[in-house]
Amino acid sequence: MLKKSLYLATALISFAFIVPAHAEDVKQDTKNIQNEKQEISKDKADLRKDVQKRREDRQELRKDVKAGDKADAQKERAELKKDNKDIHADRKELHKDRKEVHAAKQDRHHDRQEHHAR
Image (cartoon, rainbow, N blue to C red; front, side):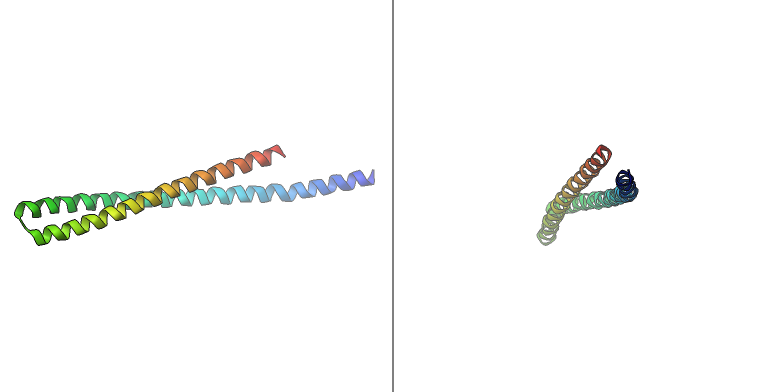
């Protein structure tokens, strides 16, 4: 009987420490995911600005070509090339970040399911 009580007490004490630790882990995971989502929103805004700048550079290039200004047209082409590289890199990074957030959500969901199965 004493042995059973000891096991039960040990189990209850263990559970008392596991549940709050798990709850804190889930809380921290949720906070991390929210922070990542905010970063993604900021990155999206930056990407929209880059796309707008590229539009403006294209318009400038068209004006320079129409005006026959080869020097400025060459400068605008170089800026467009840089804009395109930046936009491509930003889109790639944004895609990677979204995948990471999705994976973190899946992990959190899996942890919750695993915890509730105990």
